[in-house]
Length: 227
Image 1 (cartoon, helix red, strand yellow):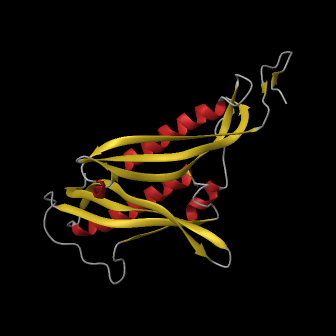
Image 2 (cartoon, rainbow, N blue to C red; image 1 turned 135 degrees about the horizontal axis):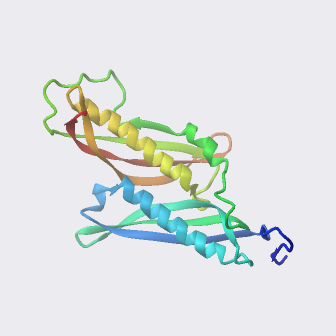
Image 3 (cartoon, rainbow, N blue to C red; image 1 turned 180 degrees about the vertical axis):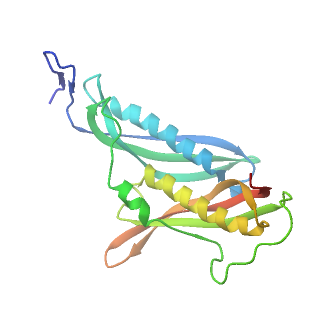
């Protein structure tokens, strides 16, 4: 059905509502080894750029110029490959939606309700919480690993909603930071950043096939005074 504009005083656009989709990727060369990971801020930026490129491509499928592909970006892969002494990190995925008015705003989804089901934990969480050391906030190094995961019906080829992907990164970062700060004296913070080292998905049979999507990495920082 061809999309047309309404006549009369209304300026609203009648869009087809047809499905639209497109794939895209984004990459960045990061100085250092792949094993060192990629800053979480960079991983999120790559996701956002890939999403915008995919959205623009998908919107070309909408027949009316005032319509766009309103939907969500689904991350299929965050991965890397060595490039000399550096590492190329990339995000690949697909935008999926329907042709709707371009000014209709973002599209909500079931994924927003699933953020609360994310599980995160720091490395070696078992046992009593160690006492924080004595001393001053002297800039000593503090670091800790953590991961976050979520069970979804989505298969690897379906991808994971970028909203959930970013939430996984944030949950892993928070868990790692909470553990790293235990290496600092009281009244100090572990000021630094979370680095995503690995991300993936694996099947699990819970009576019916589901998939566990996960992100793992390390918080790296220095003990600084709380102001």
